[in-house]
Image (cartoon, rainbow, N blue to C red; front, side, top):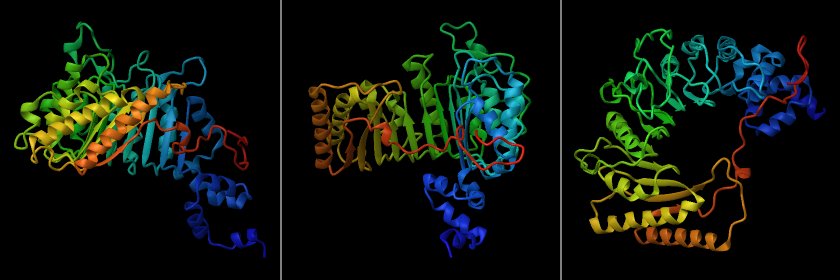
Length: 439
C-alpha cells in the first residue's frame, strides 16, 4: 500500500490532528499532494490570514469559498489601496469589512489597519464575534483621513469578550474635546461623527476614557493618540487592567504627555502588573512612596525607544514605590551608550539608598531596535566598541549586585524575525466551481 493510500485511510479527525502540529511551510507542501489532502489542510491553511491591502481583501472574496472563513482565528487586514486609484466610498469599504468579519465566526485576534474613513455600519458584526479577544486598530493615514475615537470606542465596547485592545493614531472627536477648538497648536479633531449611535453600555459617552468601562479588558495599548481628556480622572473604572502601554502624542510637548500618562496610571494603577512608558513620570511625591503609589502591584516596567534618555534615571527613581522585579529598556543603536550609563547611575542610587529601594528588583535588560526606515549602513569600529564596552560594564555592575541582565549591543537582524501570518494575495488552491484558480 502506498503512503498516499495509507494517509487516506486515516479518519478526517486524525488527519487534521496531524496537520495541526506541522509548520506552515509543511502544511503548504502537504496541501499540494492531492485535492482530498488539500481539504484536510484547509483549516490549518486559513487559521491565520493576512490581507495587505484593499485589493487583496477583494481578491480573497473572489477566490476563496466563503465557508473557509469560519476557520480563520487570526485576521490581519488593511483597507489601504495598493495603487492610487479612485477612492472607495466609506460605506462600500465598510461593507467589505463587514462581509469578511461576519463570515469569520471563529475569530480570536483581529488587526484592522484603516486607511480612509469607515462608515459607522462597520460596528454591526462586532457584537456577534463571541470568540474575539484581541483587537488592534491602527489608522494608516491619519494625516488625511482621521479615525474618530467615537467609532473606535463603540467598536471595542461592542466586543463581548475583549481582553486585549491596541489603538494607534486615533483622532479626538470635536464632541468630546470642545476645549481644543481654536487652541494653538491644535491637535486634529473629527467633526460630523455625532451620527454614531449610542452604545448599550456606554450611551453617548464614546470618548477614549470610556474604554475603562469595558469589564473584560485586561491589556490596553494606546499610541500616537491625544490623551488629554479630563474623563481619565472621572470615568468609572470597571475593568481590571493588568498590562498598560501608553504612548505619547506628537502634537503635544513632553510635559503634556507626562501629565496624561500620570493621570491614566492613577486611574487604573491598582491592578496593573506590567507597564510600558513612552513619557516621563515626574511626580515623585505620589509614585515613589509604597503607601501612596497608585501602582502597588507593578512588577514589570518597560521603557520604549522613544522615551527621553535624559529622564530614565528620574522616572525609575520616582517609581520606587512599586514592587518592580524586572526593568526592560528598548533603545536605538545610537542610544545604547547613554542608556547603559543612565542605568548604571540608577543602580548607583539603588546602592546609596539601601535595601528598601527597589528591594524586589531581580533583572535589568536592554534590547536594541531599528527604526523602520533605517538602513544597515556600515559603521565605524569605534562606535561598535563603545557600545560593547558600555554593555559589558552594565552587565558587570548587575552581576556585582546579583541581578540578572541581558544587554544587546546591536539591533537584531530583521531577516531572522518570526515569520508573519501567511498572506493570501498570491496563494494558489485547488479549483472551485465558479471561482478563479489564483489570488
